[in-house]
Amino acid sequence: MTPTGYRPSLLRRVLRVLAIVACLPYISLKVVWVAGGELGIPAGSELLEHPTLLAVANSISVLADAVVVVLALLLTQEWGLRVRAWLLAFPMWAATGLLTPIMAGYPAQLAVALFSGDERAAAPREPFLDDWVFAVVYGGFILQGLALGTLFVLYARDRWGHVWGGRLGELSAGTSGPGTRAVALAGAVVALLPATVQLIWLSGSTRGLSARRAAERDPDFYVLSAVHLAFLVAAVVFTLLLVLRRPAGLSVRPVLALAWVSTGAMGCWGAYMSLVALQPESDVAQQVPALAQLSYAGQMITGFLLAACVAAFLRNNTALRRRSAEA
Image (tube, rainbow, N blue to C red):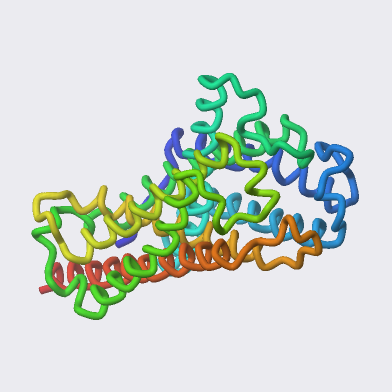
């Protein structure tokens, strides 16, 4: 159901501007790098070793961040309420999945640096990017996530809020059939591999790490491993709660929101890390071992399998509520 006479409130207009402005530092840096500039890249950085690959990757990054601008406009315009749900859902799920781990991980890294006194926390040990780049780019990502996430919550409440209310125990069995439950179980089984690998790394083992990565482990490494493990567990737990409709007393909306965010984090970051790991690397010390590649692939597969369950739940629940309203 699309509300009539929709007009964005002052809050939405402010959030729209914030989301768009927060994209500018990242896009500007990427454009400079695509053009051959080295702003923020110190001498000796490995980024300068593959200029063609750097230009291609940065061009893709500019397009990806431009999607945030489109989404911010879509979520605050009347025409955006007429966009087909599936056309909005995937880019919004991907944006949520890519931004949320940064929003959780970077502040945690800074907190660890503050309490440990490690001046090099939240940045690589070897020359990669100047420290200010991380603060500007990740700060922009956090603002994007907060603004875009709030806009999407407001948008979803206006457009679909009437079909997502109630508690898990009140849901019809038709929201998640045997096929959906089987897929959710498969996702939980696949998740065992990346979860085990993350636990191994958190325990201090270097198994599955490249020689260089093993040598450069620092508090940041452990923070990120803990963040990925937390999102992995959340994706499995909240998706299973959703499809099993238990415990009956839990509200649907927070369970659905957490399943949405965590499956996006696993699916999108798993895909990103898989692509990075598959890049050709002549330096043996930096080659990603097979175990790590399997772990990243496992994260990706887990995220996409569980996201399919969330999508099936949304489709089925919306259809059931609509038929009930029309009866």
